[in-house]
Amino acid sequence: PVSCFAPEYVYPSCYSARLMRLFLLEISLVTLALVTAACSKKSANERNFKAAVQEYLDRVPECVVASLPTDVLDWNGLHRPNSQLELLVKIGLVKRTAGMLHYHDDMAFFGDPNKQAPGLHYEISEQGKKYLPRKGQHPGFSLGNMQYFCYGTKEVVDIVRYTEPAPAALVGATASKVDFTWKLKDVAEWAKDKDVQTALYTARELAAETTPQPGEVGLVLSNDGWHVPSM
Image (tube, rainbow, N blue to C red):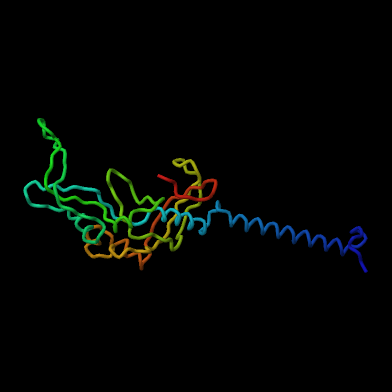
């Protein structure tokens, strides 16, 4: 029998066999490199972009906003409730109490400017606290006593297209603009109230429960993959 442990020039068939093994090894290494590159979080592909967009959407749930706590003073004996807050009272997110309210009279040049007047006091109810943003969620800017009541989360459906990654001077990193579609899930029942949809403009977002809506976002590449830059 032929032994392939002998010098190749003695048995040419062994030389061919070794070349074939080397060729197959090179193919395996190339395939492994391609698979590794495709699996890298830094690769520009739909899977990575979908994960990055979803990570962003998880931080920005759909919400309605109100200024709370808020006092509405009654100057002439006739209560004039805040219509938006009254709607939130109706659906159980806000608690309203009537009574004597403290206020600061900026026009009181003489005497004590701290006074009282009848009025309505609005504050978040125990039910409403269940819909406040969770830790890590930032649905919008927080100014003064703005409060967000979140009624649904967005889920990526498809990555429609994206630009070829390129250096972006404004963010100082490689960036790509991504177009995607999303749908709304885990919708709170109170958000489906017809008055809420009309007064708080939630109809478009609620339509995304059944019809995916378009969206776009800019992604930047960091040391651990693609992300939407923090504002």
